[in-house]
Image 1: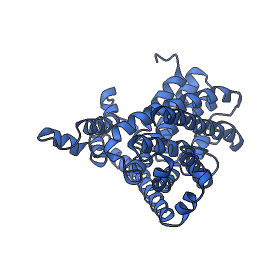
Image 2: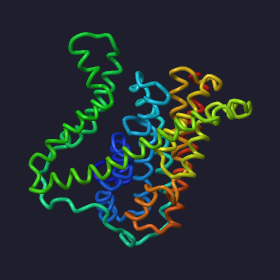
Image 3: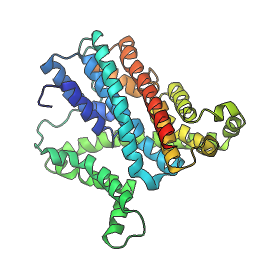
Amino acid sequence: MGGRFPALALAITGYIVSIPIYCDSGFIILNSIRKHLVKTHKASPVFLSTVLGTALYATHTLVPPTPGPLAAAAANLQISDHLPLVMLSGMAVSVVAVVVGFLWGLYSQRYEVKEGQFERKVFPDQPEKQRQVGFFVSFLPVLAPILLITVSGLVGKGEDGIWQWLVFFGQPANALLVGLACCWPLISKSPRGGLEVYMTKGLEAGGKIALIVGCGGAFGLVLRASDFSQLLTSNELLVGFGLFLPFLMGAIIKTSEGMATVALITSSALIEPLLPLLGLDSVTGRMLALLACGGGSMTVAHVNDSFFWVIAEFSGMDTMTALKSITIATFLQGISVLITVQILGWWLL
């Protein structure tokens, strides 16, 4: 961006970074860049925080291999063989959500905060001296899993030789393991004690993610095994909602319990038995149902969402300011995703 468009650069960065990692961790990682841009460009902290937070949130809820969309696509909606299509469609729809978040961020500039007023350190400090690395080496851990999953989907099954290896490494777990291996140049020459800090922080974040995804999937299957789905199928009005029903399920669960990943996994598990009745029992229909669940699972982030507090505390917002900026932004994002998915449904189904 040449230093001229700090908010746009931050939105693009957040859009990319949140594809393979959790949005909470992404905001913490990028917060130092955001603070630097606030100082050097005299930009509004609320504006840049809203732009970064909503960009991270968009791909976090819509694009595999982020844990929520990946688990919903592979385990619940059974479209793991079409992950490249799911990734591309999620990236396209999430652009709409990023634009909406950016526009609300422009409006939120009117809210003033004192930068760092409520800020507190959550993780241990980084080692003071770090080796400088190139852009490609830094971007490779993000790029490698996306390319491997995409190539695996394009190659398909039943190929011999090197193509079988591409399919093998294109499996989501294997692709992420390759991405982890690509991190080695970033830490191989770290100062003494640096690797310990990185491993500690990684385990702190990874353990929480594994717990959230596992509990969310289990909760969804418990609800699916209950009479809840039968209750919905017996209600002809709800079944006639089409793509609005998965969105509504995701939004109700998300707003009540706070975690977008849990809402996405749970709502996708509940909606899967209803797909034939909703006219969505096809690859395209399941993909659109996943996007609708993703849109619902970002509606809305408020006081029971850890990401809400990460943004508020690292940006120096009080609770009211965060509600005016982040909560309303995520509501508008979810509605924009729903409208986009509905339009795609009329065109593709």
